[in-house]
Image (cartoon, rainbow, N blue to C red; front, top):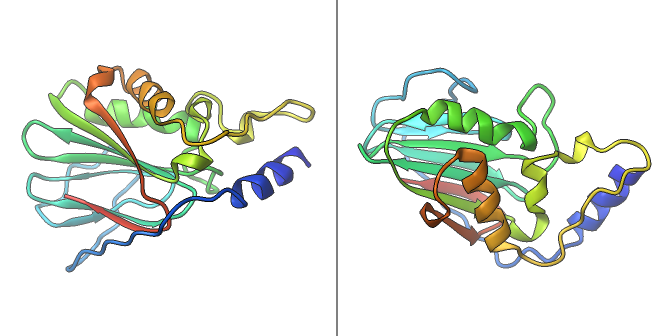
Length: 180
């Protein structure tokens, strides 16, 4: 019951203007973790997954409505990205597991920037520590009150073990995102 109420409350949040970006060319879907980056081109990263694009490539995050995307820019020009879903997609990573999987994928490679984009107003920073599905009957699920850019940046920096100064957060809900 609490989950249904939270879902209804979050869907009623004003998320701001819609933006949409598309890339041309093939958009293969890679496995959640462990694969080598695709040759320069487009890599699609769906909800609850991690993907990687080689230097010169792009990551496409489809249907970002209530989600957040986290893209790590590597010094060599490559990208490693995660598509964090507000509600877990069956069989995929929950929001409280996605940053550790992204951190593992990046490893000790040098990072130049970390970009967080998506439905900022729908996210409480704590969802990266305890996913909505992690709350039991009678537990109070935190509901975001406004857009917490700094809180999300801090949570992502902590989850990835990187300096907060590398992280930027942008509210760009409702559409496909292309990062290159």
